[in-house]
Length: 351
Image (cartoon, rainbow, N blue to C red):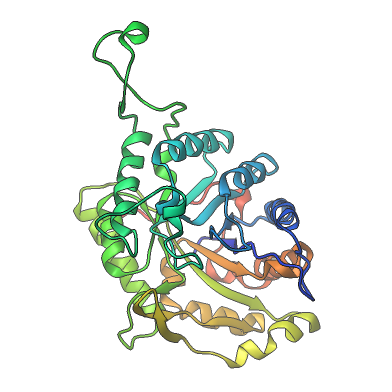
């Protein structure tokens, strides 16, 4: 682990105990949290994307504001549901964001997670004839088109009266660094290998759609190894990034113990069924800093990835969440190999 960031689900609701009552509260507080994290030296500020729910849903305006108000921190998503996206508009917005942020972005994209709406992407006007129940085929086809477009492919026939005969136009703007900042959110070993073959970065999911009896961190480490092997076998020669996410809470105050002390007794993975697949979910880490250091060093996936995303309880407000990030930065992260954002952009491991 070289870097860590926060991953916010962007929950909001007018309920007792919530410091995030409205969508406006959530958006403004997320920007505030990114600004504070940037000053602490945190490497990344990432948001989940969920449609049809009281959570963060439209990431581009939020990420643009976060990038404009910070100096060093990377901003990104975990993940954009490609079933809902027009690949051409998404390509334009992503390129603009990359240029505004000067490359400080990590756009996680995937087929998306289960949602409250029944095939909600159809309401947005997108239909998958081959995979109508899950939309997976459509999502991957649109993602492949998105990659072609950000690589500068001419896709729109030009008006010969304006540009001459036989010309096909590419989207604008183009950002030459954008492809380096695209991640695929993989939930299985097979999708991790496909991500490697495409030469992308790997954003390993908060769950794996596999249940072999192995601990979650071992399954995820295997996923990372397969990704890197496929990346190398495909002939790519770069240093791809890899991220994993965990719920980690250093218990350094009475407030921490009141919120998460009982979680320290729930020291195990969970197995369940999600989206029709028997799946493995990672455990929550909540303990004194020295115990956390020992536990996380034994987490094979955390130590194999370059970036750890800490899932945060955003409804507890930015002040408390900055406390969590500060405690992790001071008491835990240095022992795991962390380099703060003042030391420059995060680099992946050469394959």
